[in-house]
Amino acid sequence: MSKKTINLHEDPVRSSFYRYLLPALSGMLIKSLFIMGDALFIGRGVGSEGLGAISLTIPFFSFFTAVAMMIGIGGAALMSIEFGKKNLQGGQSLFTQAMLFTAIVSVVLVAAGLYWLEDMMALVGAKGYMASLANEYLGLMLKFFVIYALAWVLSCFVRNDTNPRLAMYAMSGGAVTNLVLDYLFVIEFGWGMTGAALATGISQILIICILLTHFISQRGHLRLSIQGLGFDKVRSILKIGTPTFFIEVTSAMTIMLFNVVLLSQYGEGHVVAYGLTANVGVFALFTMVGIAQACQPIISFNHGANNSERVRETLFLGLRSVLVSGVIYLVVVWLAAEAIARFYIVGRPELIELATTALRFYFLAPPLMGLNMIIANLFQATAQPNQATLLSLGRGFVFVVLGIVLLPGFFPEKGIWSSILFAETLTAFFSVVLLLRFLKNHKLSGLAAHQTQTT
Image 1 (cartoon, one colour):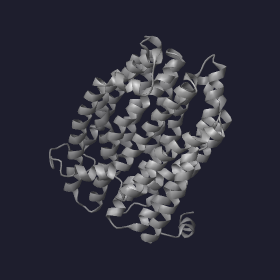
Image 2 (spheres, rainbow, N blue to C red):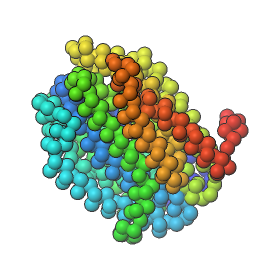
Image 3 (cartoon, rainbow, N blue to C red):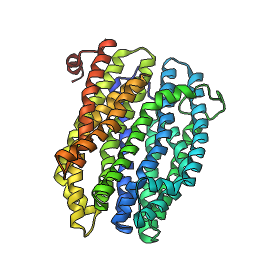
Image 4 (tube, helix red, strand yellow):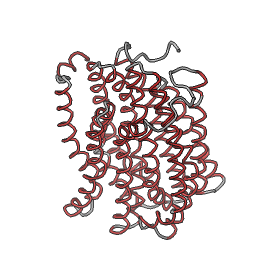
């Protein structure tokens, strides 16, 4: 084992947190920058209709992502708990079964997606040129999904196997490759949506190649082997990963609902504005995901080792980080929303105005979004999926639907853009109640005392 390996038993929590945080956050932010770059090249190389087409494909791609995240995060969390108990064989078995199950499920989903591709586009009411662009993009993207899913699951296990830096390198390398190929394929070669999809697919192949070097270096406990081959641990993996699945699936359903409502009641211009907002919004979303990823292995390991004090310290470090980050995003985007919209949309003043409004309302939500995600992550990391699922369903779908139904009646022009803030606010109430109950039950209460000790 390398001297640089993170010792989750003995290293200071703050040190371990930052050693996980910096790679996770850097990787996620770089990835989000290049997702935004993807949208930029499509907007400039294909046109505003291309941005709308990307928005139409997000729900379906998010569903496939949700499956990979459910298996990867669920399996990696359980692996960390087993490693915390010093059960290395159990952790290896979880890895082997997670990779096998991912391969099988992703092949089935890809086959189904390709067979029903046109039906999926019709489901969201896509028509004409925008529907054609969406079909072109998603049809090619699906063919890379098996690699994408395996890379996602592998990155979760590599990160939790005390090698978060390699996961960052893989994600960053893939993102840079995606950006360069986007420029070549979309702008220089004029391949349009096909070029954008091809660039993304090739970058996923690079990511999985980088991640595989973890096993060559033998830095962690995991090995590429058939030890534990079977499906007896799959149920446990899926149970722990279910909250993550609901986060992504409900997000996909929400985006689909937004697209249907916007197309039927407002028009394609609103779909373009929403597509831009969703792509820019991943910058804030991925920040929160990166912070949660930094907390999860430390919480899971120490939960398995029955070290409640280290669990509490990690939790509050994560909460402070997301709240500060969320406020920064809120202020920056409110000041720069119009400039961001003009950067993506050229020569369409009415769309720029719509996108500016959508951006400003969306970015009121990140502080509460981060709070909700860290608390849901706490329950998932400590093998309490019911609470995590409740919070995920609330913020990701139930309260969003409620907002979409109710708010436009009170605010006809801007109510639709307030739905995300509405959902995060309601979820935050339940998050705090569940958190206080968790702290009391685990004798971890005393936020003020804890803050005094760590400042």
